[in-house]
Amino acid sequence: MKKLAFILLLGAILASCAGQKDNYTINGRITGVDSGMVYLQKFDVSEWVKVDSSKILKGAFTFQGKMNMPEMWIITFKQKQVFVPVFVENSRIDVRIFADSTDKSTITGSATHDLYKVFQKQTDSLNKLVDACYKDYKTAKESGDSVKMKKADSTNDVLDKALKKNVIDFATAHSNSVVGAYLVMRNAWQIELPELEAISSKFDTSLNRSTYVLSVKKRVDILKAVQIGQPAPDFTLNDTTGKPVALSSLKGKILLVDFWASWCGPCRHENPNVVKAFKAYNKKGFDVLGVSFDTDHGKWVKAIKADTLTWNHVSDLKGWGNAAGKLYGIMSIPANVLLDKDMKIIGRNLRGEDLMKKLNELMGPPAQEKKIPAKKVKK
Image (cartoon, rainbow, N blue to C red):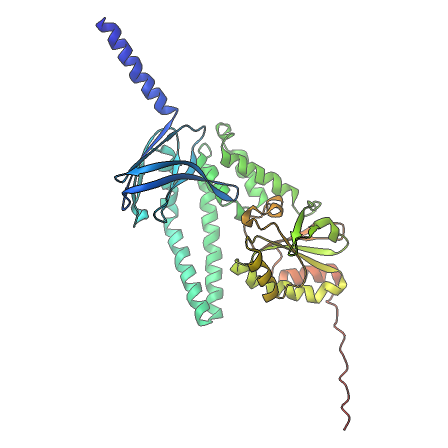
């Protein structure tokens, strides 16, 4: 009887251990918040979605559940603007959070998160340089020093390339972990199709169900469909008055599809260049279709008027969830695609003088404005 009891006890222990591998338990403690609600959220396409919620009792909370593959989720609190990212996997995860100093938070028990911390440590020095570069640019802009602004821009480009290389190298070295796939997905906006396709092919087959691997592969397919030489995917969005406008309705002109938003500083900075190109080549058959990533109709219309953008404008007011943006794989703005008269893609992300040079190549010199003779004043 004693032997049977021992076997039953052993079975219960083993079952408990096996169950832990198939489920996750997040035991959290937060200093600075004693009660209220805490939430687990994940990013889905264009918005944060609640996965679970829990009550905080004397600063402690618990989440339990089951997942197929590790994912990056965030822990948030209703009482304070606290966001703590954590790679959740089926294991016992302990989280210690300091509400007033989240950088001191600790996460243990997730092997996936441990690997993510390795990447963070590797890129920490580069991120500090990026922050310093941004401050230099901001200071130069406030003082109107264009030379220092240009220097900061140039430095930032170098740092961006270094960060991109770190992501690609890390993902290649850890092709059997969702961490690599997550980092590639998060930084896919700066990785062109050839590199992205090469990285995607190296992911271990065990990750085929990972949401991050699926996202990267989907982006590869989207980018293939919008490369130079491909027919432009058609879409229909409403203009500022609510009238539907189809991309295909503008066929017959050299057309720039310009992705922007009123809240996007670099977009507003680029707008004068688009205005210049429009004025120079509109009479020769060049047109622009502005596709806004705005969510506020009033701010969208106000920006159009303020920047004198006198061409067609459309939006579904869904921000980063913009349907046309997703169709063209737009992950950063400003962005654009240039179409020929038959709606074939002939250029991408042409900014500043590059747009004018391309139009000159396609359409010749800008149209000359007719000079109106001055009226003679009779004495």
